[in-house]
Length: 184
Image (cartoon, rainbow, N blue to C red; front, side, top):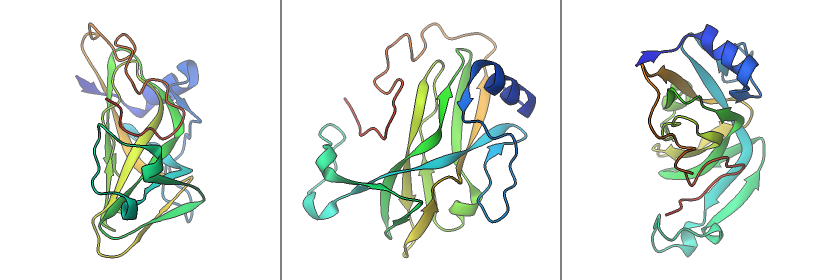
């Protein structure tokens, strides 16, 4: 496996629509950076959020999550309560090539506020908007901004293609268009 450089990311975004919409530059005055990096891509947060309704919940069970356990919000920002979390989604739609695995890490700007960004790897031939869990580990609310960078993706290319891709398995989160709750 090897890390893929910015030139590969630009080419794949242009020729194969791997990232749509694609942001070629990173620096944005007054905004948390997003776009292509030396060896990755900083993706943005969309305006859609799912906020848990903890007053109604006795527990969170990934086998029995219901849409009614969450309140939907569409806005330019979202405040995450202390020691809590919300779900969001990427602004970008991704199409991952068969010989590539993508890993994600939160941006340091948010990490310095106590925000933990949790996104599972993008498997070979997965496509869709990424659902993102944003965990506030701080004792005060943390504000996250739609349309600005939330996490960095690093693209790893295998020396050979996988025998069975996410698309081959007909993965349950394939081609997701919205924030997806857990499915079993």
